[in-house]
Length: 135
Image (cartoon, rainbow, N blue to C red):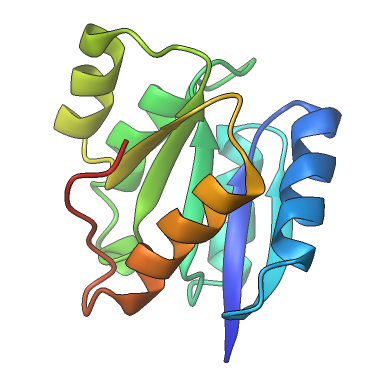
């Protein structure tokens, strides 16, 4: 089954890692799309509202991940798309802030292919894209 993932991260290295990690993901065929910041992510979503999941960095130039998330959650057209915060910010207050803003899960950097695969399994298997107990 084919799934679409939007990776919103200004790091070219992170884009390459996620693509490589998902190339070995056997459960689903995942098409990875990229955006370097929140504004570009909104443009990508306008062109592909059927996105299955968003991996969102917190620290980006222009529009931060949390700013993106707050605006994203107000858009009726995007309701139901799970958003996973992916960041080196792994303090309890950062995680709580992201989850309170509407993130489905939090995946701290660095992460392994197995951690990413397990998270995608939970998201893609959930009826509404929701994930409980993620970190």
